[in-house]
Length: 413
Ligand code: HEM
Image (cartoon, rainbow, N blue to C red; front, side, top):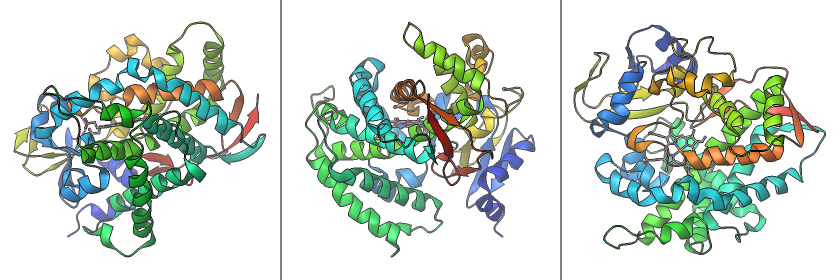
């Protein structure tokens, strides 16, 4: 009666790995709704780019309650409304516009590093998440903003716990249940609303959004501004915290690669091309957005031949494609040489998509890459991380994190 659902809920990654290994072009799954797990890069391209208008994000995001909770912004809009919003916000996220945030990223990193207990053993995952959170708060409200006693950071963390709980819960009304996660979320939203209401000044994203104009001269309404800021508060830090965590872990395990990164950081020249390859390889093995979903609005046929029924869910799973030996020989091996231009061009575009693709491709990609490079170039020359004895287990929630955190021994260099 329940089809594949119990197996899936018990061990999502293991279940999907086994389904993927059956080798069908698109694997049918009997979950809460009929679902197809995609395996072919051309099918993924079809869904994300060439035929994207036939596929929506899921009601968990796009429904009224989804938009109320996640923010009725770009991330949750229906395809029909998406393009004008995307065009409006895009300029704020261009690499050249992000230069101003570099100093803030460096300062936040240095001020957190000053409090590190070294030599010592602690959860580098939790620390990277707190750092990424401090950076996005500074980026949203501007360099002059002070988060008094860390109350906003705590509120955003409580909201994140609620989003995680809502995603994991199968109950349609999870947000109304009398449980502490929900109470804490309600209290947190009061703090968040207050800070947004007073935070449209300064030189951060909030003020930059407020200054945007549609082609006809209109600005974003107060409500839309609030919602775009809420969107940044959920999309803009945990993914980066995870990417930094996994990269520190992989470098700790691969001293030869780490040595090359340090040589690049000590040398002249900007851009850090090798460190960028390291990051890309880290996002291959541990893509923070390990899965995302589309829903077919009409019947369709995928390039592989698989038939899609209206209402069907399609699972797009970077984690699985990224570990497919058809595209990445010996997929478990950490090897930044997979991301030279030549190696990249030899693969199908949609064998690697940590940031999605098409018109819904991650808007924060340039910010994420820049932030990771800035943070790593502050941390690595000064501190050495030692890997844990055990390979960390994965916790596939809203993002892909190490289960129970990632305790590492940290020493000054
Ligand atoms: C390593 C870090 C990040 C990863 C792996 C990541 C991944 C993704 C992915 C896979 C999507 C597409 C989801 C879909 O199509 O269903 C997405 C969308 C999005 N991301 Fe990111 N993201 C990261 C960082 C960020 C940051 C830092 C921001 C903002 C500051 C951000 C803002 C957004 C927004 C607004 C969208 C929705 C875009 C749209 O629908 O037009 N992301 N992200």
